[in-house]
Length: 115
Image 1: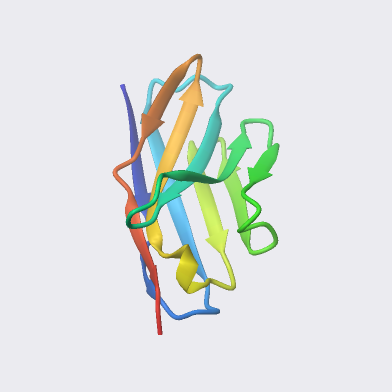
Image 2 (image 1 turned 60 degrees about the vertical axis):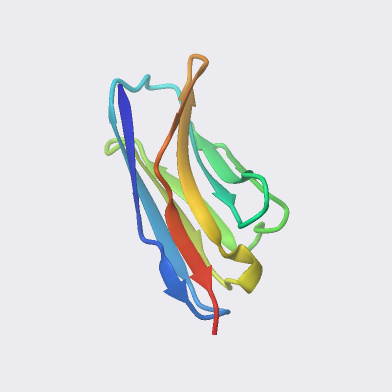
């Protein structure tokens, strides 16, 4: 069983920064991909960014240059540094880890960007 616990969401003004963290625990295969998805009200869940255990990254075009994903393999933790936040970044952000055909999700953390 794998558990993912997100933290770091909240209310922030446009242009400011926020950092999300997600700690994974349980039986996790060492070769995996960890990532962040988000779902805004009335919209489908979408990929924000993901990172392989080797450090390869992938970003949605809407966040490229503003968000940075990183991970600490020793802690099975993934981070999402979000800079220059915009109101359209408002969403519930979900942590994800996948390996060997398995897909695991956190419960989500709400990020609200508003003045």
